[in-house]
Image 1: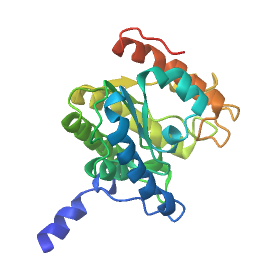
Image 2 (image 1 turned 45 degrees about the vertical axis):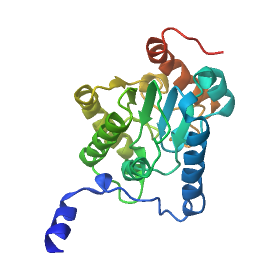
Image 3 (image 1 turned 135 degrees about the horizontal axis):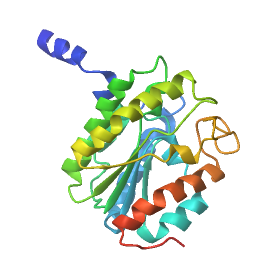
Image 4 (image 1 turned 60 degrees about the vertical axis):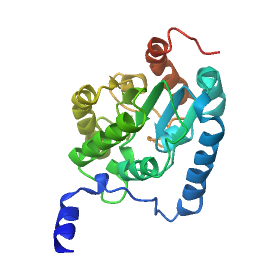
Length: 233
């Protein structure tokens, strides 16, 4: 067991697939995973657009979701609280089975930055690389849009914002290496002085309806390219 233990110690937490074990999430996380597997089996082949992420994806404003992505039968694989290691676990336990999206939108990493002691930006980047590898292997015909991790914290020098910025600095090269499109729309959310307004993200992390509307606007040109100019309702 010694070599295995030694090998495991070399891997950062961001690369070790695990189920969500946060006390506030264990009651719903696995049921949601199972519900998504069943939903994918029922309607997955109709879903041309897939979103993968954490709470920021999980809690898309329902009206804006339907308005902007309904024509693509969009499928939401956002799970609140997830870090890269949880996404890897979900993928390796069937999350993409029965799905064949034309486009996959990925944004993950802010919980690697923010939960507990937090993880170094470089470790989070490795986790994102691993997720892209899984997507490329399991969904070979999808086009991936890799979002910059959204800004957090009130000001540009917020400690956790700076970690996310460090992740984002590495992501263009990661996207290029993995055949994904990198999309940074963070300026949509920020004031000119780079403060994050509470009328967009009231808790300085999660968008409200106004924030989701900005996300939809920022994402629309990329989706139009990949879907041949189809428009939302």
